[in-house]
Length: 260
Image (cartoon, rainbow, N blue to C red; front, side, top):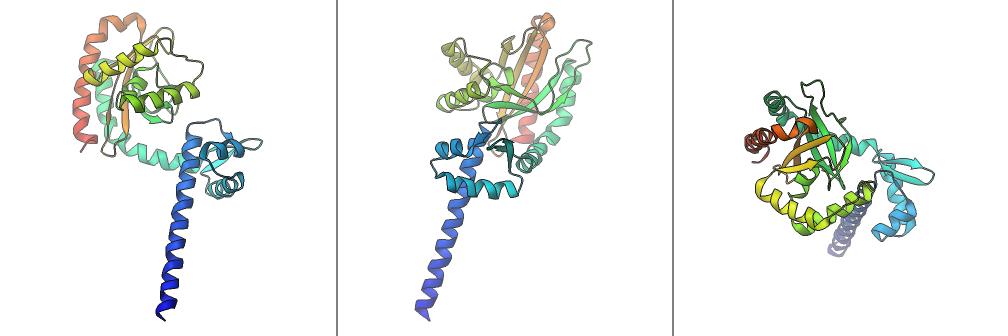
């Protein structure tokens, strides 16, 4: 009886270890797809995660059955709506907590105010309060911007160490190749400054005619969130100091809410 019990316990242990291994492999596949929003082939995924194509195929089939991945083209897959819904439900908790303060900031400055999170090598917009002026800067909720040439993106980068920020910059360049870095040394110095001042700038780096200020902080789960104020450049210079003051005051207010 004792031998039978030991065999059963060993089989249970092996089964548990096998299950953990499958979960780890599935997570690795999903992280790879997160960095490639347009999708990858099974062969590309297998090469990236270091698994056999047949193993990747089985795991992807299981993920697809839960809508965690979907087809993005002949033989390609990408992150699916099932995973997006889960991510949205997590992000919405922070958005709901911050939104009243986001509206108050919008009222105070009269400009568009955006809330964004890190998604792969991009900044993902999850909430927005439109400005009151006739001419305002607007970006759709759900839109993805580069990290390395936007105010909210640079603010997010500054939440990380120099080494981790470099890795994120490479992801940003891979996801947004139409926005090359003109001066990497200057960007590094800018991130060092942002870590001290908590204010990031975009002086028409991402789009002509639009400048922006941004700030970011880590929530209670260690996830970076960013708040930015995009402004038509024609009135940005005269408002910059006041916008910076309001943004930093906002940052201090929400620290008590999202950082515990």
